[in-house]
Length: 256
Image 1 (tube, one colour):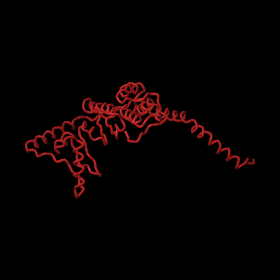
Image 2 (cartoon, helix red, strand yellow):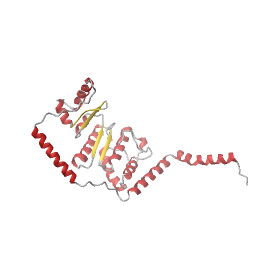
Image 3 (cartoon, rainbow, N blue to C red):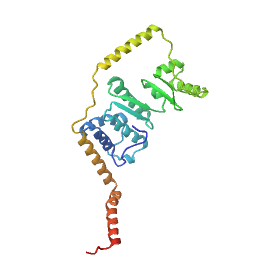
Image 4 (tube, one colour):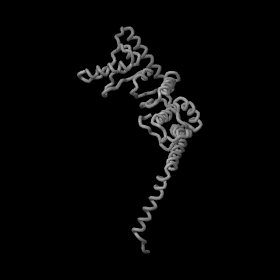
C-alpha cells in the first residue's frame, strides 16, 4: 500500500475493491464475502460512492482494504493509519496482529510516524538520518534504556545521535549473557536450521481462471473510465476523424 492514493477516481468504493481483488485472482463472490468484514473493520464509506468524492482519510481506508482483500503473504504498508480516527486505527492494528500472530497468514512491514502505535509490533527499526539507530522489540527497547514509553526512548536515541561526533548508527547493545546461555542458543539455532531445511517449500498457487479474471477486470476498468469521462471519450473518437478530414482537404483529390 503506497502513501499516495493509487485508485481510479471513477471507481466506486466496492468497484475499486473488486478491481484489485480480481487482479489478484479473486472472484466477485470471494471479494464480496471479505468486503463485509473490512467494511465493518475500517468503517468504509457507502459502497456506491465514487473515489473522487471521498475525503483523504476515506480514500486511505479504501486503499488499505484493496491491499488486504486478497490476503497476501507479505504486506508492505506505508502510513496505513494516517488520517484515520483513533477507534478505527485501533481495530486495524488488532486485525494486523490477528493475521500475523494468531492466524500466521501474513508478514506485515509498516512505515509510520506514529511512534506509540508501533508498541504493538513484534519488532521495530528506528530510521533517522539514513541510519537505523535501534532495532529490537518495543518492550526491550523501553527496558534497556529505562524510559517510560517508546516515544521517550526514540527522543533519547535521537538526541544521542545528534550528540555523536561520527554520525554512526547507535545499535541496541544487549545485556551480557553467560557462556552456557549463548551455547544453548547456538545449539537450538542449529536444530531450527535443520528442521526448516527439511520442509518442502510450496510455491504459491493461482486459480485456474487467473488470467481470465485479470483480463476481465482490466477491461472493466477501461470501460468504466470511458463511461465516466464522456467528453474525453468523445474527443478521442472525433479528433482522429478531424485530422483525417483536414489531411484529405489539404492534399486534394488524387488524379487517376
